[in-house]
Structures are given as structure tokens and as C-alpha cells.
Length: 182
Image 1 (cartoon, rainbow, N blue to C red):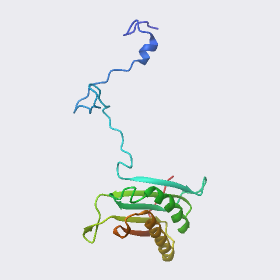
Image 2: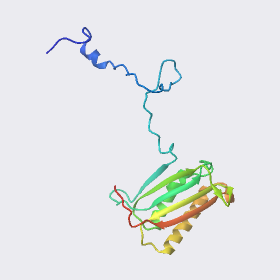
Image 3: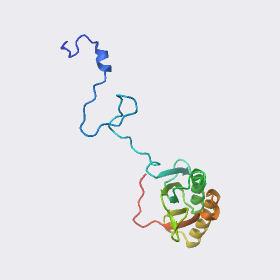
Image 4: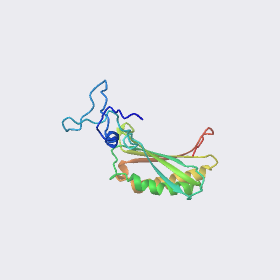
């Protein structure tokens, strides 16, 4: 065993604690944090789904052992409908069990919210909320109509703004090519 060390005289445990000097990198300078001489790390943190404009509410119905199934729900809404005008969290908590019950599904419902920066209705800018419910096939048109009516009624309870907000619901079948993992 060699006793020679590049930092002779420094105990071994101190050598292990020392953090190596950062390497210089090419390119634009790293952003500063506002404190002189302190810079942020060169890597960017990943954006959260909310920052990307998407966020999902996932609720489990049926408990452990329930097989995953439909529905897939997408809610497109005008971006300026903030939480005071459209309570998305409370809406999602009631929407999931409603759709699972009305569509006779079992398992997990997936709800995705997508804000739209601009929405136009009949050529004029109006706030708008559209809910798409995608289900596995074999539901009758009457079942889909009842589900649409129930979701539209629920949506009316969570969207403030009265008649000035246009709301709609679409219930459709997933294509035969649909596959689910997990």
C-alpha cells in the first residue's frame, strides 16, 4: 500500500469530504442567483407538468387489485379561468367517480387538464371548457348521452361565470388500436 498522496498531511477522511472544484464549461455563463460570485448549477431542473400546461389528477376507484381500465378524460379550458372561476381540483374529485359509475367502468380514471391561451366562440373571444371522455367500446348511445348530461351538470357546478362560459362534453369510444400498460 502506497503512503504517497497528492495531498500529503491531510487525513484520509478530510480528503473524502472535499468536493472537487467545478470544471469550466464552454458556452454562455451560468445564470446567477443574485449573490455576487455564486452561480446556479449549469443544468436546468425539469419542468413540472403544471409548468408545461398539463397536470393530471389520478384517483383510484375500486381499491387494491382493481384492474386498470377506462376512462381517459381530457378537460380543455380557457387559461384565464383560474382556480377562482373553475375549481379544477374539486371538479376532478367528483368527476372521476361519476364517470366510472355512469360508464360502468372499474379501476382507475385518468383526468388531464389542458389550458388554452385563447378560445373563440363564433368569432369572439369567450371562456370555454370542453370535457372529452374516452371509453372502451360497447356502450350504447343512451349510456353515452346520460354520461354527457351528468358531466355537463357537474361542470356547471364548478365553473363560475354563468352563461358567459361555454361548456361542452363529448363521450367517445377509444379506437381498436388502443393499448394500456400498467
